[in-house]
Image 1 (tube, helix red, strand yellow):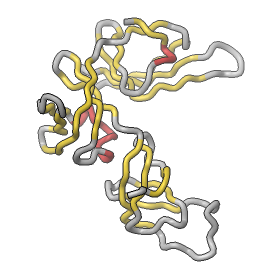
Image 2 (tube, one colour):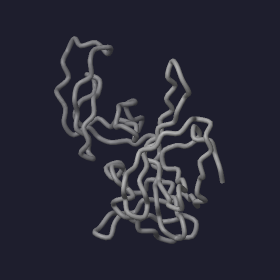
Image 3 (cartoon, rainbow, N blue to C red):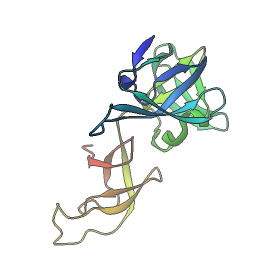
Length: 188
């Protein structure tokens, strides 16, 4: 089915010259002068080659028919990452190349959208936010205001982020899965 380029998002699959590509990032660029364009960074599903394409925002792109279903993350092993369909209890193994840099965000029991094309998992879409514990950060300093600069921290999943000065070691925080940026303290 044809869609306009500006409607494509991360995780969508497009058919280009008979080959399937999963979109890694999509950015709409509106220059002051000239035509707005959509910059797509994609990975070819068959061999993992990354390509970058630019389309005018109104240009038509062929979107591949992909079945997207909610799955629950179970565990990771040498075969890859294992997900289960909560309705049919069917398990799907997703390779490490498909999960890519999203692997640190996967938590046991997390609901994830898995895209399947011809019985093969080709991409996953994580929830926008995830909760992790701060395992290492600088100590809280008295007299710092909440509006001061952020300090570096390491999360329980091994990722680095920046947190406000009032957040200490052992605090559970919510981060965006897109870039590990701090959102708020966890409410649990």
